[in-house]
Length: 104
Ligand SMILES: [Zn+2]
Image 1 (cartoon, rainbow, N blue to C red):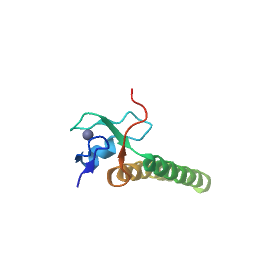
Image 2 (image 1 turned 120 degrees about the horizontal axis):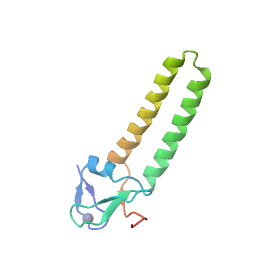
Image 3 (image 1 turned 120 degrees about the vertical axis):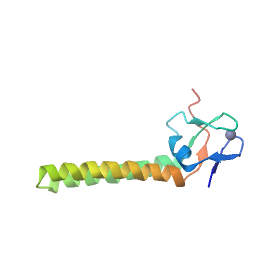
């Protein structure tokens, strides 16, 4: 399964390469076929905003309600790692590649 480049239309990006292209906020990665830069579109930004919002709320909740400090910091680390993994998986399998807004 590969993803198409928004410039030349060739299906050259593997899910891992697609995830590593970053979001519209980044410069993107060059297409192996035409060399123009590609990045993940707005869906990726909305998804990561939603996930980080939920993760932030969960971290606050754990911080407020946990009685065992060591245990709660482990849970907080777990929530942050989980949210990063979710964003990465979204970029791998969902959304599509677009042209970056930032060109340099
Ligand atoms: Zn291309």
